[in-house]
Image 1 (tube, rainbow, N blue to C red):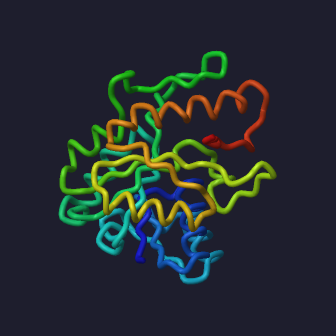
Image 2 (image 1 turned 60 degrees about the vertical axis):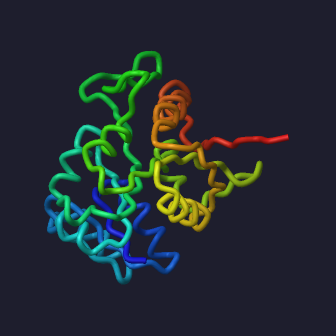
Image 3 (image 1 turned 180 degrees about the vertical axis):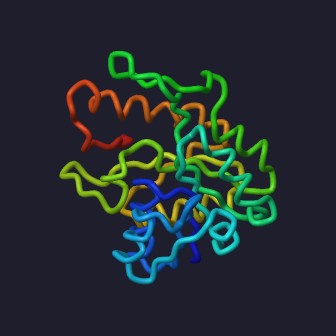
Length: 216
């Protein structure tokens, strides 16, 4: 597929490199695609491209949202409603509050317990098919991670079945076991997994773990 990634930080670059590795065409999106770190990523990844958000959203048959949570809505606005219509948008963002340090290792979100960033995005961009995924692990373990205990689980959710099938296939390509949590409302549970994942990191400097769902 042609995959457009909205966001040029560690998550966007890591997923972009992973998708290229598995044979997809990738364009990385940035508010300034000429900045040095974006151009360095393009040079380091054969066939990679970079562009502004609207250009990337027009290019992609499948889109990945990989900005800071506070910038997610604005990024989709810049991408353009027409460029989002009918497309899967895999939302890898977390609604982490800016300027607030973790409390005993627990991050603070700008969302409440009965809402989620993914739901808000789906409501504001109804013609896009938002699917929450890849928000519950650090960038360093997103692409084909190896764990002695087995294949880790990637939880995902969304309201469009066809979009979720696309995401599940990519999850498998990147070396994860996909687990469908249902409609976009399930993002209320999936997004806080970021908090849980970060606790060992902030309290013990352990950042190499992933979640695994065990079924008997």
